[in-house]
Length: 196
Picture 1 (cartoon, helix red, strand yellow):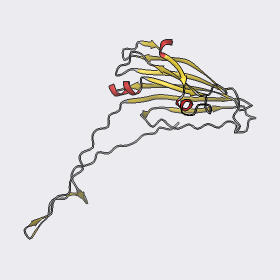
Picture 2: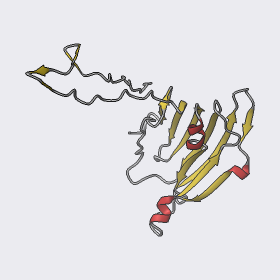
Picture 3: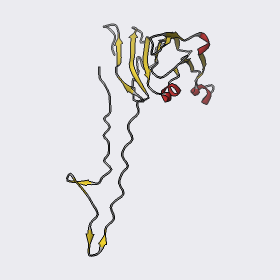
C-alpha cells in the first residue's frame, strides 16, 4: 500500500540570495530598481478527499474476471459538492456487464441517505457518441442526493468481463491524483496455475 502526496511550499515575496534580502543598490547618483517580487502563494484549499479507493480483481482460468470497485470520498467545500455530485462507470455491453452494488451518502450527523433508482442513469458513453458504429460502450452514472459540506459519498460497482480479451488479462490502474487520497489498493486474485 502506498500513499501519494505532494508538498507545497510557500514562496517568499522578498528576493533573497545566500539567505540575505536583496535591496536596491545606489551607485553614483543612480539606483537600480528592485526586481518585481513574486506574490505570496495562496493557501491550498482541499476541496475533497478520497478516503478509500479499492479495486479487487478476481481472474478466472480463461482470463475473464470480475472487478469490484469501492470508493468513499469526503466533500470538504462547496466546490466539491459541484465537482463530485455523481460517480460514473463505463462498460462495453458486448463483452462486459456492470452492476451497481450500492451507493449512498453519509451526512455529517451520521444519517445515511441511499441513492434511489431515479438518481441512476445508463446512457451511451461519450466514446460511443464520438465514434458511432465503432464503440457501443455505455456509462452508468449515480447522482448523490442531499450533499452538503462534510458529506461522505460511497459507491460500489461490480464489473464482469464476460469474454476474455485477445491479450489475456491486461488492466492499468492509476493512482487517484485529482484530490488527496488516504488509501488506494489494487488486489488481483487468480488461480495458482494461471500464468500472468
